Length: 166
Length: 172
Image (cartoon, rainbow over all chains, first blue to last red; front, side):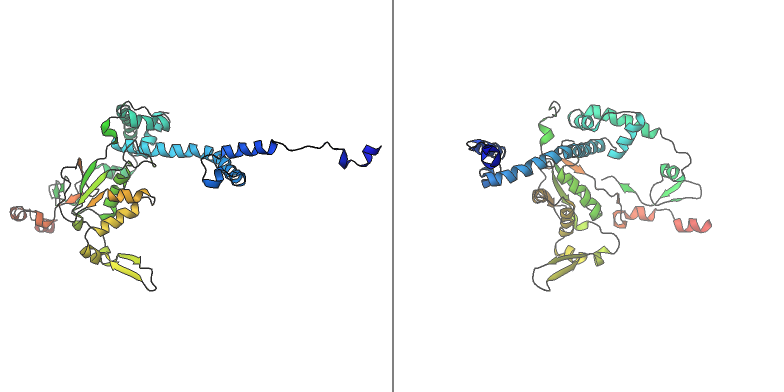
């Protein structure tokens, strides 16, 4: 009867003891390597760790895009060393049905140049095999006229300017 | 992650490229040089490591600006004082220092980060064909624009023996 009337005093007394210390130590330990107070003082470390964990969460997702961007730059470099641009290479490989992913293409470009050259050749072959008979501009581009040339009366081009190899 | 099997000592060395800027369009040349300074032509490129090479550009005094840019293109800077906007036309800047136009162009084409200073230090510009890096040069690269012969490059015999075009066209 008496206990039910004053319920506030019925709860067992709890001394906090080492609980807070252990919780804080865990956080401060996670903040190791952070600047000055943020790696030592719990209040600052707590904020620092909260930011760090949030950044880690989002950047784990961003890392996938970052890596792909890096692979693309490397593939572009290797492709251009083989006379192609990145866009042409990828298009040619799609046409050829080559499904090698960008990670491996970048890896080959850096470590196995001969393999990459072979891949570039398949892409080039596929691109060359693409014919577009109805496009006048493509047909005109294929005609190799020297620059600034005039046609003589007999039909042969008259070269006015020459290109000097650098 | 990457296997180092085919990496040799040569893979990570800094190369020295020589480019002749005579009759090259400034912007197009600057674009090409900026890529070389960053090392984006290498399949080992990484943004945190400076994989760039040295680039020596000679004859910058003979580089080309198209259109009327020599008279109209303005290079501006502000001294910080009120009314201190300084403007200089490309022609005058070129007379003052024939390497400045190309230097500013390349500087603007590099990513604006802490590596830009180091990359610009690897750029060596010379207004004429004299340069002091003959022992270092590993490759010579052609510029992005095709080089044509000017009238002064033809010998007098070639000029006199040139077929008479005007008369031919009048017959058509």
